[in-house]
Length: 187
Image 1 (cartoon, rainbow, N blue to C red):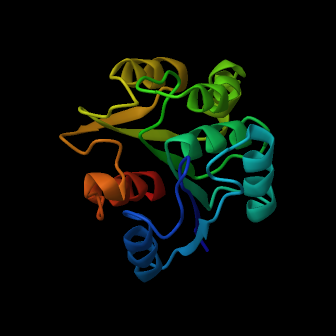
Image 2 (image 1 turned 90 degrees about the horizontal axis):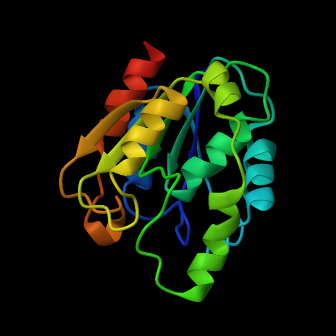
C-alpha cells in the first residue's frame, strides 16, 4: 500500500491549513496517510525532527511518499540523505535553502542550524524524485529557491500565485497542486 507522510512546518500543527483536507483526499484515493505532529514545533531542531520522521516511517520503500511544508521540507530532505532505499518521491511546499523575512533574534537562531548544516543533495537525488511548490508572494521563501531546487535536486518546480507561505493564515485550505504532483510521482 502506498504510504504518505505529511510533515508540517515551523510553529505549525497537523490540524491547520490544507493538511486535514489533504489527508482526507489521499485517504479517499486509497493511500495510507500519516499526518505527523512534530516535536517542539515552535523551536524545531534538526535531530529531533529527523528522528521523529524516521521513527514514524520505520522502513521506507518505493511505495513511500512525503509531503512537507517549509521546515518540514528540510526535515524530509535530511531524512532522505540518511536512507539507502529508493522512495516514491516527495512533494515540498514552500521549501527553502535560503530564508528571508526573519525578524527576531530567536527566529534567526532557530533557523541558523537548518540553513548552515549541509544536505547531501547528490544522495537525495538518487533516492527520490522531488516536486517543489512555491508561491510568488511568499514572505519567507524567495524565488531564488526555485533555481536552487532545480539546480541542486533536479526538482520539478511549480509556482502558485498569491498563496503567501501556504498557511491557513494565507487562507490556503485546499492545495490541489499537491495532489497533481503526487499523481505524477505515483504514475
